Amino acid sequence: MRYNLSILLFFICAVSFGQGIEFFEGTWEETLAKAKEENKLIFVDAYTSWCGPCKKMAKLTFTDEKVGKMFNEKYVNQKMDMESVDNTSFISKYPVRAYPTLFFINGDGEVVHTAVGFQDVNGLLSFSAAAEKKDDQSVNFVEDYEAGNRDYKFVLGYISALNKVGKPSLKISNDYLNSNPKISQKEKAAFLLEAAVESDSKIYDQLIENKKYAKELIGEEIFKQKVNSACSKTVNKAVEYEVFDLVEEAIQKYGKEHDKNETKEFAYQSKMEYYRASGLTDDYVSQAEQYYKKVAKKDNEKLDRLIEEVHKVKDNPQAKKLMREAGKQLVKNEDTWKNRVTYSQTLMINDDMLSAMEQANKALEKVGDNPRDKQQVNGLIRLIKARLRS
Image (cartoon, rainbow, N blue to C red; front, side, top):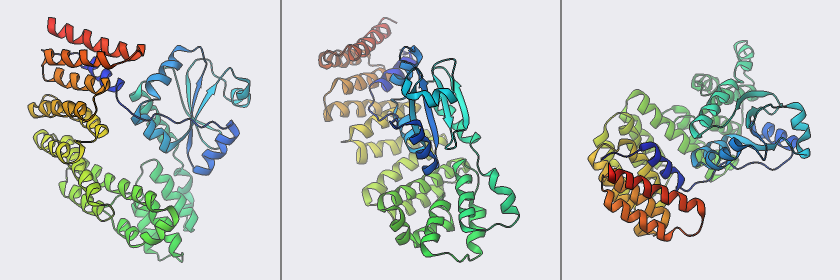
């Protein structure tokens, strides 16, 4: 039997947990100041209270975990009711004719990129990527750099601008450090924090050598996040160039700055990413099984993400079996209607429609009185019935 994949994925997304976009509640002037201070773009949702597509985006897109993670990290996010007198200064400068209109605006108040109308998760992420490319400030440094400007703050600003848009910065960073600049230990640490974008580099090794000063600048937790980012980018490079040794190097360097459990989780996830991207499905599923048994089994948030990821190779028999097992474990850990729905979905993937119906009916018993929740479960039941009739 076959099932409607788009509907099934809708249900997976509908019942998942996650933190969406956090919108700043200051004035427009405060938003501009915050963006300039943090060197970030401003994302603006220009909406009205009566706009249907605006409500749909607020309900389905802005609440997505992936969207929230990216937008909360990269942007100052602001919602603007275009009929509110409190937003007159914004409305007068950025008039719109259709809703929602979505803006990316820099700290100087200049519009970088706009889009009009409803955007789903993928559409909004693509819109974000396009805005990042347009906000390329690195071009403003080229002429002075080629003319010989090697002032510390200037070079630091240049590599920061390059890194922000994903342009190579390693050569410029190495050239600067190899010139033996007269800078303090803390200035060098700050430079290395910006320059060490990948863990498979001498600059990253220098950052680790200077981590005492780096941690004094940004703290232990943010330093670990920097290590995470650099090691993850090396894993991405391993995938791009099909060099598994880089995965091993990233894991080894990650392990020097994290505890045993954190490193074990990073190792499984890195190998899973490499094998799946390389088309080595059996190796991917094997790693996923180990990740399930040794990391995710008692953690429902990780189980949810694992099921969603393994679904990408759902045609593999072992992948189907793993999803079913993980779905069952979700319910064992915590017997909620949402977990019953997820378990039912994994049973559908395994073409076990009778068991899927049993779990969906149990979800309906637990769902409570919320109309939206009931609609989700009843929709799943209708889908299973249709599959049983086919």
